[in-house]
Amino acid sequence: MLTTILLTIALPVGRIDTRVREFLLPNGLLCITYVDSSAPVVSVSAYYRIGSYHDLPGKTGLSHMLEHMTFKRTDIYRPGDFDRILDSVGANNNGFTSTFYTGYYEEFSSDRWELGLKLEAARMSRCQFLESDFRSEHQVVAEERRLQDNRPTSVFWERLDAVVFLANPQRNPTIGWPDDVARFTVEDVRDWYHRYYNPANAILVVAGLIDPQNVKNKIEKCFGRIRGKQTPLFDAYSLEPEQFGERRITIQQRVSQPMLVIAFHSPGFRDSTEIVGDVVAAVLGRGRLSRLYRRLVTDRGLCTWTSCWNSVQRDPGAIYIAAQAKIVSDI
Image (cartoon, rainbow, N blue to C red; front, side):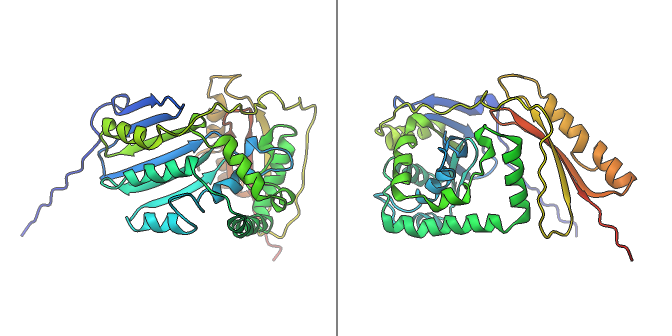
């Protein structure tokens, strides 16, 4: 007997520009909604315009330390409660710090997403920073820093970026330099939070199986009363000095395969609207059909792996060309 099973998948309806809406609350919070009916889930995300790029000299990694602390304590959750509250409704969540921003997200079944708004509103305006909470979380971050120092590849990339950029803050690791991390205080974290965590310095995104008008009403209810203030952000776009010659760094570590990376400065978005750097990187080293892979791996067998990418976010960055040399046994 032949049995036929028909599967029906609900796909998003309409062009993407009809499913995306933006609105700005009076307190400066930029809100974006995106309708996607392909699955009965909703994602709530909050992004703050603060990252390792904005960390002050001597306090590198402070934005990352603050990210950890925002999970600890507010007026509606205590240490450990944040994850327990979300686990109880089957939600997934995480936070991350990058060069130019810090982000948080929660993923829910489509009938429970409003909890995400309540938690993110509390994170935005009502975090509490106790010395006892800070001491325990500072140890966690310090251990993350030690793990970085024990990974040869992490050490390599940190040192390389510190040579590629002499002045631009992109030279600093997101987690911070070891001595800076060791000196963090709870006052540092508290001041950083009050300076940058507010609606006028944030973007809220709700995406999934939603009714945009209902979402707007809920956002206004949860976030509308939070006070916003404009926060000037440091801009180092043109700070990097001109390079007059090759800069070289050699890292000696016990690794199974040596790696070579060559970096060339690449213009930022204010200097070029073209995507030339991305195209060049793709042709040179993206995938097994790229020129570098075919020449060095497939044809000549000198390397086991090659890659090339254009790392430009907001400021000028660099095109990185990387290769792992093939070790030939003498036996």
